[in-house]
Length: 229
Image (tube, rainbow, N blue to C red; front, side, top):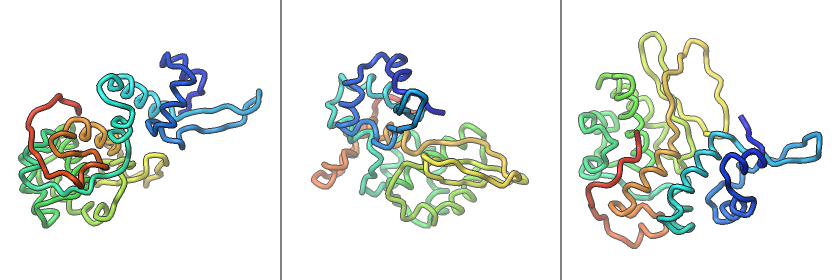
């Protein structure tokens, strides 16, 4: 569903100038500005849910961070850092009971940033839908090769079910997905939204500002405000 620029400015109480400044600063992606012909000429529209969530996030954080810092927090770029068992135990969104399962299923004990986001997604799915550890193990084994080379986080992680078995699907967030009707959609998680929350919550713990991380050693600072629900 789209929202027009006029409707957006009215609903969010921001100015035309603010909107386009945030665009120039990289806080709002260029591809979200969609030009479409109308009866009165041409108007700009936006993906409604995404733009409203993004502006709400900017308004909440703009007094705490510079626009440059916010751009890095909200950007879809991934961290190059690998995450160890010690790291996973610090990240509250990872279900501690699932860590041995993740090691077994992935066949390793350190994970890329995108893999971390999928581990968090699996932890959330387990909590939402009371999945068993066996379910999580099968989902992990099924998705591990798919996400091995992913370098972006702008994906939707979809939990599906068929004949009592669960499956995962990843697809780009700016596209739709058409599925076999025998697959039932159970739940979905936006990896980009998780990424923004993780960068914000743990940016000091793990130096998740992508421009700075190569120059810094890993630090561990426990605690922080809860971001994901």
